[in-house]
Length: 156
Image (cartoon, rainbow, N blue to C red):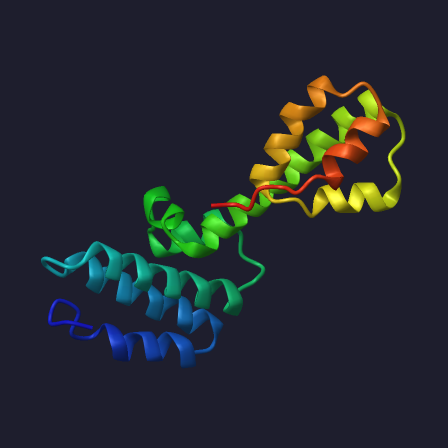
């Protein structure tokens, strides 16, 4: 930490070591300190918010995201910058895309074997998007099998 966040390190220690309700109060204190610090690095702030959110999520798993957000007075921008939010958002988007592609394939190719369904659900988001576009030209299950057998581009 730099001079802009003189008390952030000890306060984060208190968040880590506190019981769940106290951890929430300690996290709130650290966030208030961050907001009051002049000329703080935004990447550093995002890292600290990410760490605090992760600690609170693990200590208070029964709370919903909006409850944590309200208690810590975090804005949507604060939360959307955290790694936790981005990973959950990506996972949700990927599951939704897989579900949509599977339904479309079911209509185009008929009943899919469980192994094929599993293979599709393990595709990356960009691969699912590519399959979603390709399936528009499929005439049957053979086209799907051919697409799945072809090497798929790696995500960037």
